[in-house]
Image (cartoon, rainbow, N blue to C red; front, top):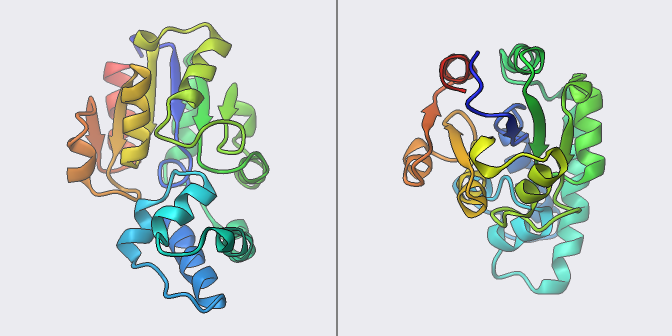
Amino acid sequence: MGKRFELIVFDWDGTLMDSTGAIVASVQAAARDLGIDPPSDERASHIIGLGLIDALRHALPDLPAERYQDVAQRYRQHYMARDQDLLLFMGAAELIDELADAGYALAVATGKTRKGLNRAFEVCGLGPRFHGSRCADECHSKPHPQMLEELMAEFGVTPELTLMIGDTTHDLQMARNAGVAALGVAYGAHPRESLEALAPLYCADNVEELAAWLRQMA
């Protein structure tokens, strides 16, 4: 592998872990529990990558503000009942191992809470391979650049040497806001055309394509 980049930052849900369906179903179930019309699959999937309360504001824009915490509580219950069964995308663990062994600094920037990311790390066993991470309860929600800015400062890496990889427009817009190059993955929450509108360096249809690009170009 070359060394065009020093720091590679991954989104989690929909990029490394195949959790889009579980998130969508959990948001919809939480709404139904409280007698609220659930968002469509498309609207619910669009919120993936945001912090939970910001996500619910987008998914259920007409809901009174005081009700978002109730929906969030129900969402967490539904999602945690499913998350032990969630799997990494095929090839994701091997890709992370390969990048770590090649000497890249690896990090995660996610809409999960710290507790949620730690739980995901424990379930999949990949936690030790990442050198840093930022979560939605520690920083501004995507697409604000704070997560990337803090990670770059932590590792002493400039934007020119940093790459963000994600499956949503929130990820790619965060990268743009931070002055960082980005890759899109079209196998997650947002459609390829939405990702390509933000001009990523590449948009991969699967982890194998992503890995091939990184071997040649990163």
